[in-house]
Amino acid sequence: MPFTTILALAALVSIIPLIILYLLHPKPLEIHIPSLMFLMKVQEEKKRFYSSITRLIKDPLFLTQLFVLIFLSIAAAGPFFTTEEPLSGEHTVLIIDSSASMQTDERFADAVSIAQDYVSQKNSIILAENVPVVILQDSGASGTNDVLEKLQPKATVVDLSMAISSGMRLLSDEGGRIIVISDFTNWDGDDPVTAKNLAESYGLKLTFVKVGKSADNVGIINGWLEAGDSGYTYNCIIKNYKSTSENAKIEISANGNDDVSKTMTLDISARSTKQFMLTNLGTGITKVNLANADSLMVDNIAYISIPKTTEQRILLISDYTKLPSKTALSLIPNTETTTANSVTSDVNKYDVIIIANKDTALTKDEIAILDGYINKKGGKVVFIASDALAPDVADFDLFKLLPVKPLEVTDETDGVSLEVVQATRLTEDMKFDEVAVYKYLNVTPRSDSTSLVATENNIPILAYKPIGDGTVVYFGLNDALGEDAWGNFHNLPEYPVFWAKLIGWLGGAGDISDYNVKTGAITALSKAQDYTAPSGAMSGNRVLYDEIGIYEVAGKRIAVNLYNDRESDTTVDASDVIERSLSKTKPSVVRATTYTAKKDLDIYLIAGAFLLMLLEILIIRKRGEL
Image 1 (tube, rainbow, N blue to C red):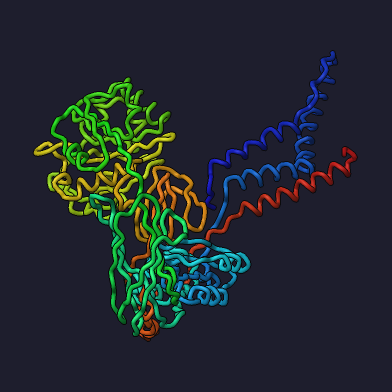
Image 2 (image 1 turned 30 degrees about the vertical axis):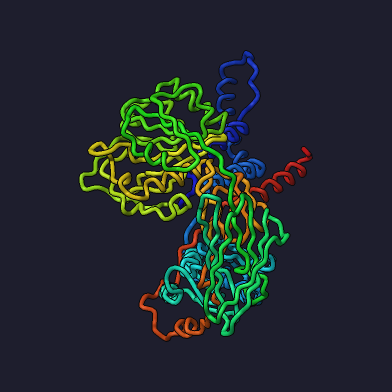
């Protein structure tokens, strides 16, 4: 029989003291007796010993306590056995489309109502957004209905294929059915019908349920900011999806309140767009409201966030003069970069410190200063990989600060490519797959770190971890040019953009685009922290912007808008998706009809030990000892 923790069987030695305790006798008295009587007494003692063993075996109290110890010891080891069980159809995975178009009329409410009709004995719920969000797993009918009643639609594009894949993983062992409820008007990723066919080829039951019908709409489908000498200019595009022209009334509110400061009207022809501009926008939040009521209101509002500009002070430490990072940092607006060749005690006046030594390892004193800067001031430090971070060169105390553990410098003659491990605002629009790496520091990530970019053989290149109130970032491409460079990233146009994103993320004001994002964007935070979404307070180490409105994250007010032509097109009829999903084509692969189930025995052993304890009490009471 297999055990989960076989070492726990060592607890069986506890029965030895029990046996000794029962065999113990009082110490005999020393007396003078004739030799014949002594021989008779020896024979008597032998009989008494064997008689004690016999009485011990027959003593119900001893046997009860013995089996209690045995049962508890074996239960601690976690015994189990496996059986082949038939696939169950009782587990239902409800996938509910939570995209922006589901806010059209009563589509989302209808989807929730339909989902309630499919609730079974065991249920899981996945909200299908641009990434699937599992909000309930393996719950009973009552708990499932409670969660369904509280669901609210989001404002992203949907990836139904990815949501179906998540549902398949939830049912990978026991089997079951997947119910996909959507308007099927628009999606990212693979065709959901293809995902349905794949699920059915594995023996899963999958049903598409369509909600909603074609409706009219006028919405804001795009918006962007342009910097000028006198401030920012906001460009906005409104589209009329109706078959008749629309006189759109636009209300502008400034300073983050609903007091209308300006109004305008636009005559938009049927199925066409019109653009307008707002010039000289000041800092703070500006709200653009399309006052016309229609079937989809989520695209009638756009928010604009313009932060107050504050200059960020950066300290670049290096023993090398030709630094591509220095050039990139000089291009970031509202930053002041100071270069030095060592870490000194005045580091607290800087917002970000970048360590880019090529050969010179940091001293213990320098490491101690950085440690205090990170832990006490909440400072942000970026370590750029080089030979100076190799284990045979760097001081051991430095490794306590790094989000990775360096092993050795590795050469790749043919080069390796990079890939994004976790997509965030830092990696958005960055073509890391075009970066060729010919040399890198072979490192392993620490358990409390987060890797964003890695080589194709899973060596972290961009990673970070929180330390106290501060953040430490590791960037795995050395800061050198020419033949000394470890890769070609510094030659790509994305290189200065990367540094602008990184400095902005670490605590600077960042680019204006960091304050105005589209729904579906994801931002990695340096550590788990509280933030505020339009729907209320939340917490986590990353933010999924899936609502329209203002997010307050790490002291920044971030405007989030839909800006999606396809999601705003409520005139789409998705009947063809349902028709294609009903194809009679037989699945080419048939999944096994059973799965291996693990049956734990510890609960039965614990119950048996408990019953024996009750029996022990009854025996003691019957003997009059209780």
